[in-house]
Structure formats: structure tokens, C-alpha cells
Amino acid sequence: MTKNIHSVPAVLLSITLILLSANLFAQQPALYKFIEPNISVSYDSNNFQITNRYSNATYETESYDFEYKVDTINRVRISINANHPIPFPPKKTQDSIMLLGLEEIKATENDSFAIVSYDKQVKNINGFSCIGFVGYDKINKQYATVISCYHFSADDYTEIKLLSTNKNNLSADYELLQGFLNSFKAYSKAAIAKEEKLITSKYTVTVSPVKTVIEDFQYRKKTFVGMVKIKGKMEHTIKECQLINDFGKEIFIPAPDGSILIMCNDKKKGTVIKKGALVLLNSFGKTVKVPFTFSYVNTGAR
Image (tube, rainbow, N blue to C red; front, side, top):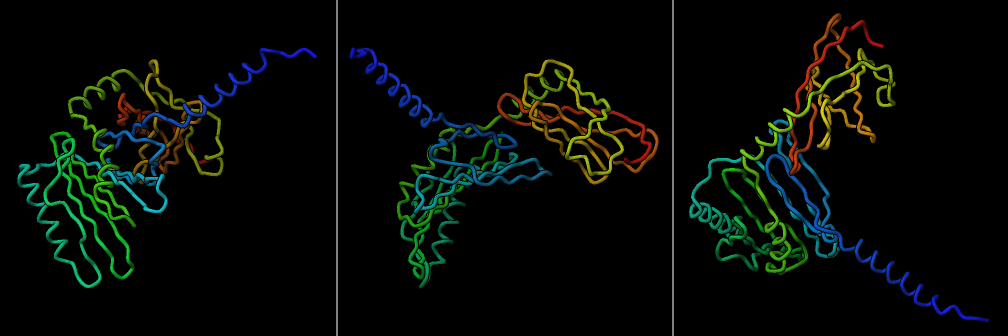
């Protein structure tokens, strides 16, 4: 029997390619997350995952919780809360207030709770002012770390808090937090306004009536069903479509093919004028609303 001398190298090459592919897949690049209204962070998805999102529709702000998924024993959570900029005191005053707050926490020590380690001064990391401590629950015999960081600027007011349990190592927790602080970016009003002007001038939104009724609308009373259409070459991601109604606004999500169907259920008969907004994501992930209006003749619900 003649041996195929090329078979062994081919097998080895195949295995090598499989291992390389698996390795490349495992080493995912840092994921980018924009947080309304004006900041972004990057994080290693091999180490962290987003577990919670909170939003304030009135002020259009967001908060996210990032869980450290590598260590399942010592739970670590990093919470990021973004807000609109506010008047802020000088750096020296900020530090004094933070140190005073830590002194007040230390004053709560008693027979069941103790502070075992803490920052003697405010740490400054990538524009953030940070202060942390490790507490010990004497009854349950458990450690907990709290690190609070604040970023004040003309562009943002951001709070980041790290909470960890079962670990008495303030330095190690700071190392975990470091990546979020180093990747942090705030976007100026000018940059946001420039992108908004570009997008709102680029697209025109129209609504055309359709007879198609998707499953979500099938059992709902409706006086109008329409297809949202965009004039202009689409170069931005569509997040949603908002339609104003008697109760505030209703949100419609694009279908997998990108199309958006909307529906109305209005009490007023005859010609009805509706207002809405197509919500797009700009180049760095902030939402931009492209307003639109349309009208239809309401002949009754169907």
C-alpha cells in the first residue's frame, strides 16, 4: 500500500487553522458602548457582560451595570450612570466633599461593621475623582468593597461605582475599574450638534398607507397602518420609530429587513395629522431624531 506523504501535513495544517480560528474567536476585541446622553466606554467582553440597563425617558439618560463574569465567587459589578453636565465646584472642593463623605462612613463603625482599609486621599484617574474603602460585616463575616468615581466637565456629569463582595483587596478592584476609566470618552455639545445637523438634513421621512397587517397589529384596534419610508441613501442605523399619541408616544422597532410598520388608533374622525420621529444612531452611537408628520382620513377602527 502506498502512503500519502501529503496527508500528515494537511491534517496538521487543518488542525492548526482550527486552533487559530478558535483562538481568534476567543480573543474578541473590546466592545464599544455609547451611553446616553453623551459618554462612551469600551470593555472586554471576555471579562465583562452588561446585565442591566436603566433609562430615563424624560431626561433621555441611561445607566448600565457591567458584571465581572470571570470571578464567580467574588462578585464584582461596575455601574455607570451618565447625565447632562451640571455646574460643578472646583477640584479641591470636590475632593474635600468626597473625603468628608468617607469620614462619615467611617463614623458608622460599630460592633457589627468595620472599615478595614480605605483611601487616604482622592485618586485621580483619567479625569475621574475616585475614593474607595473595604468594609467588613462582622456578623456574616463578609467583606465588601465600594469605589465611587465622579467625572465633571462641560460635556458630562458621570458617576461610576464598583461594588465587590467576598474580597479584601482594594488595589485589585481598582485594577478592574481602570479599564473603564481609561476607555471613557465624553462628547461635546458641538460634536453632538454637528452630527445631528448632518443627519436631520440628510434624510426625509414619509409614511405611506398599507394593507399589510403584521402579527403584532393583528388583534389590535387600528384606524391606520402605514409604512415608514426614508428618502436619501441610508448610511446610519435605525434604532426605532416614535409616534405621538394621546398617551405620550408609542415605539415601533424595525423588522429584520429594516422596514418599519406603524399603526394608529385615533378617536378623531376625518383628517388626522400625526407627528413622529425616526430615531437613528450617529457615528458614535448617540440617538438622533428625524421628525416627520403625515395625515390620513380616519373612517373608523378596524
